[in-house]
Image: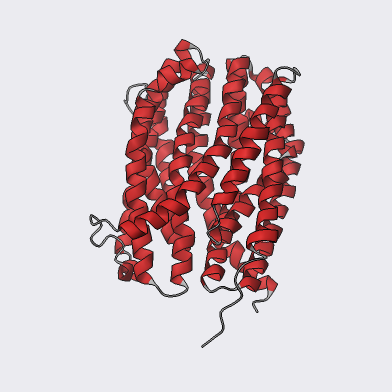
Amino acid sequence: MTPFRHHLQAVFLLGLPLAGSFLAQLSIGITDTVMVGWYGVEELAALSLATSYYFVLYLLGSGFAIAVMPMVAAAIVNDDRVQVRRVTRMGVWISALTGVACIPFFWFSGPIFLTLGQQPDLSDQMQTYLRIAGWSMPFFLIAMVFKSHLSALEHTQIVLWSTLAAAGLNVFVNWVLIFGNLGAPEMGLRGAAIASLGTNIALFVFLALYAALARELRSYAILARAWRPDWEAFGQVFRLGLPIGLTMLAESGLFTASAFMMGWISEEALAVHGIALQITAATFMIHLGLSSAATVRAGNAFGQADTVNLRKGAQAALVLSLAMVGLTVVLFLGIPDLLISLFLDPEEPARDRLIAMGVGLLAMAALFQLADAMQVMALGFLRGVQDTKRPMVYAVFSYWGIGVPASYVLGFPLGLGGVGIWLGMAIGLSVAGVTMMARFWWGAAANAPPPATPA
């Protein structure tokens, strides 16, 4: 039996670079938010809602990429290299098809925003951004497949450094195109969209080449006969990945619905909401990295039918996640004004009012840190044992049956405004966290098969 401290060390060493890579990926969005925020509040409001819309579709499609991770982890402990290649290759197929299918939703997004109650000028700006940035979706999703593949093989350092390089590229291109530096035209929101498109293409190309050509990975022949369909593996990835995508869609839909509700209040409320979401997302990436590490470790244990190490690995991941929750609550309650001010131009006339609004939202965010950590960690465990359908049902109920209605009632009929909308999100996340943890500890982990008997 593996000692508990070894589980802690393994999850930490695997999860740290994954968390760093998620933070680096998020920093691309944060960079856009900060730099567009310096450019103008109206552009920031448009970017906030446009990126929320983009990520609703991205998260739905990314379920197939995420499904590759536990499938590869379960195959690799049995040295089944053929299965590793099959599921990764079909993950690329499904992700490419999904990304292309998203393009019309970006191209014709303006009427959708108008139907959802947004102002015509704001809707036009959001559509302009998405008609450019939307073309990055196929590249973004396929890059996620290669990230999952490499993470399951514990090549997490390259995932981290490639994503950091992409974030640096995004900063530079933003600086050039948003503000018109180095002789380039001043493109504002369009410049941010072009930067995101170029960054995602570059990341896709690098990860694909590394996965195919790195010396220690060549034996997997990951792109060998990539044009040939493998319908059995296609079905395996699709059946596991679709519930993951729908689960993530349900959760992201809660946050997107909150963004639309903030837009009903005012452009300033929507802009501050976007800033607060970027801050909370940054801390969430730590939990997401630990959750991904837990998925790999659980997938390894599941592949070997090792119930004892499955549970101990999950406990180790929870200890690390809870430590992060404590630190986050201290930051959100201790220095909220400083965190919000980082995203605003010092010369912005409404700066003090925007900071005051953001402080209230971060106070609500501190309330749901534990719940948010619980639900993402539970999802990591459940994905590791390839249990994805029941969590999808829990997610839809928690976020749409409880979270969205609670946000509306607290925000508008009860008159709490933006704080009420965020309190409703906290309620939905709490229900999801409790139900999914119960599913793992009294369901999947309790009923997992016993360890295999050595030959």
